[in-house]
Length: 196
Image (cartoon, rainbow, N blue to C red; front, side, top):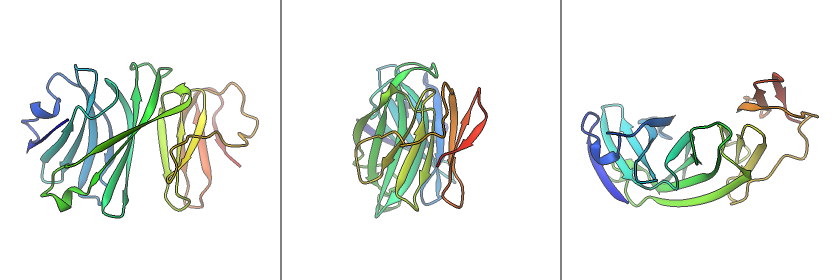
């Protein structure tokens, strides 16, 4: 992995040139946004862009070439970014969950420095297509096209919920947590449902 900082328009070091930006998330401290871009070498890069347009990058940190959605949170002085790493752009692709941790860029002149990667296999090895971060209950919820899963933020295992309200054969497309802590799942073929 190499690190890069520069202008938004000069981001070849991040791998944007020739790559495709995939997934974005607001930075945990709301100072900008995070994104990821596929690279030709079989990895992806994580990119942090400030509100002023300054760019910092962890080049080639990802475990796969294709990237899906991502979500980020603050944990103490670190940022933790959860990224859907996939084998192809297909929504039914196999893949995993990449967890990237690094000190808040505000502690390092606005740069991503010292990023580490942990890859966690998803349920049924399907790639997540959406995430919902429930910081109140310390849980990351996710859906693949065929499964619902969750991971307690202090664990490294993705589990299935004990009940899915009788959903059978659903093709999941979205997940969210409302202000009351209810988890909602959207599907392309059976509408939206609240998990119990």
